[in-house]
Image (cartoon, rainbow, N blue to C red; front, side, top):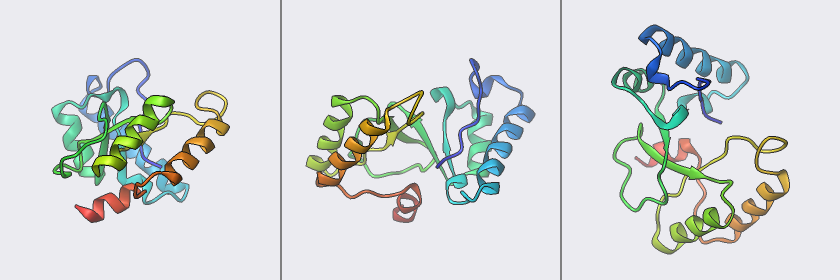
Length: 149
């Protein structure tokens, strides 16, 4: 679990500073109130853009932030608020990234928007988990990743 404010067709940075802060606080509180305290420390960037004010708010309220567009990454994690991720629902491409992570010891963060009716099927998700389980990779949570920094 990770916090991801709903922004509709807008980018988060297009909202006023007060609206951004409110959305970030509400999304974090939503997770905390449902027992996902650890997940509430992590943020997924909606629409992949954070403005200067937004990144400051994310740093204030979250310990880790993910952005899109980061295939396996071979460099050490230097900024926990700028962690690349890629779609876990991209079929063969996702599996290739998992293979690259295994072969080169890279960080590969898979991102899932929806699992089930409106997204990746539950069967495809289970198949991907089995593939990852068979791969020579260490699976970590975002909290584990933070502890390694």
